[in-house]
Length: 69
Image (cartoon, rainbow, N blue to C red; front, top):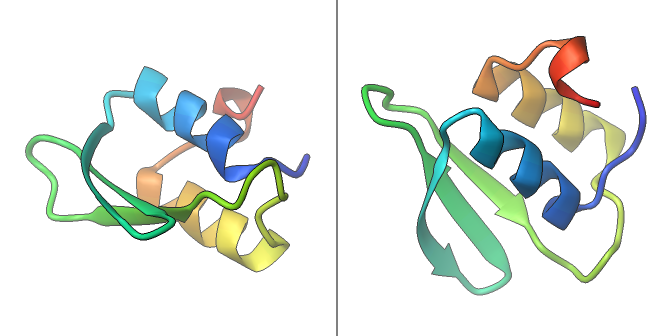
């Protein structure tokens, strides 16, 4: 899987219906109507998200490989 910065990942999940709930420091908290899952996405400039965190966020958001284009 290609690496993404927090800003790039946010654009992807917003297209899938996730909405910004609040900002807590450098972390943006996203939620989706009808879901109890909350995604905490760190925004540290254009620094890439680490592989394990990115995999966890993709799985939690219910995204597929074709969504990550």
